[in-house]
Image (tube, rainbow, N blue to C red; front, side, top):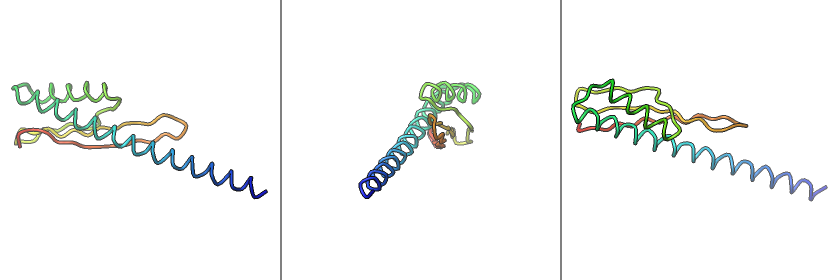
Amino acid sequence: MLTLAGVVVLLGLTLGGLEVTRAITLAHRARSAADLSALAAARVVAVGWDVRSACARAVLVAGANGARVSACAWAADGSVAVTVAVDSARPWSRTAVSTARAGPG
């Protein structure tokens, strides 16, 4: 009986550790996708294209990184702020959200 309890505790700790690792990985993916999307959008603005084109580029870059853009805004100083969300796989779905800003300002 004591051995069974030990196995159950060990299994619980292992599953908890895996869930923490998955959450950390998801947060890193969201940060990376937000950074890359903001940099891509800022580059488009820097070469003189309009803000709509910049946000479209941010959507493409975020999608290539497994994320989706939930907000894209241009500031008067020429910087672009992009917010992305990344969803995890099942069985316990989680969503990580991150915002990044890039540009000359």
